[in-house]
Figure (spheres, rainbow, N blue to C red):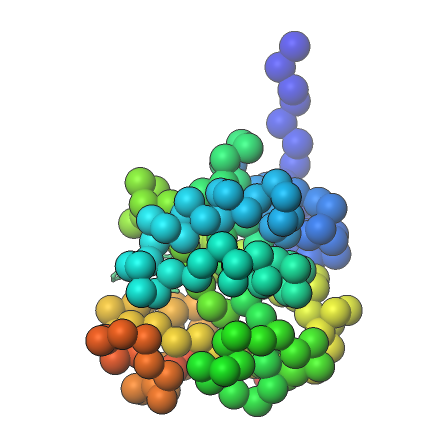
Length: 196
Ligand SMILES: CC(C)(COP(=O)(O)OP(=O)(O)OC[C@H]1O[C@@H](n2cnc3c(N)ncnc32)[C@H](O)[C@@H]1OP(=O)(O)O)[C@@H](O)C(=O)NCCC(=O)NCCS
């Protein structure tokens, strides 16, 4: 027998549920925290598709992020298949090359390391939906309880993605002091919560 369609949860209902235990439907997408044993291979698959080799995090680095900061590492799924993820750690005051290698639970800045959508599904609006969910539902459910000092979300990105991040409330602060390889990276910042 076909399942009856359920009413969509309101935004406040979604925010109240723990992302560790609940899958929240956004269309057919579901979101949950990444689990080391279940998800590491899939994260590495998408990481490998998403970034050139000199920008990729290796398995050890990704594993460290899941162990240390798994509660701010979110996967997006279509059915059982992971189609995107967002990885972050917490730092104090600034995003630097050094702070990106660590995780300071007392810190006041969430450093968003990567958002990646599997290659075949890009430019279809998925990145927008994943980042919107992460910033407006996932983080508000996790940060106040686990990382109460966080007041900003920071990231570095290449110039062509400036529009993508500005759509989600980030301010483009111009060229960054952080360098990976050739391209000039730019600093982006967004308050947390947004309207502060
Ligand atoms: C960046 C990324 C997450 C965007 O996801 P996506 O599903 O392709 O993005 P969407 O289809 O939701 O597009 C969202 C907006 O960003 C823009 N955009 C997306 N990818 C872009 C790109 N490569 N260059 C320029 N603009 C881009 C889109 O045009 C769209 O803007 P619009 O709504 O005004 O048309 C995805 O391309 C990806 O995984 N890239 C490889 C990894 C990476 O570079 N991650 C970001 C750095 S950490």
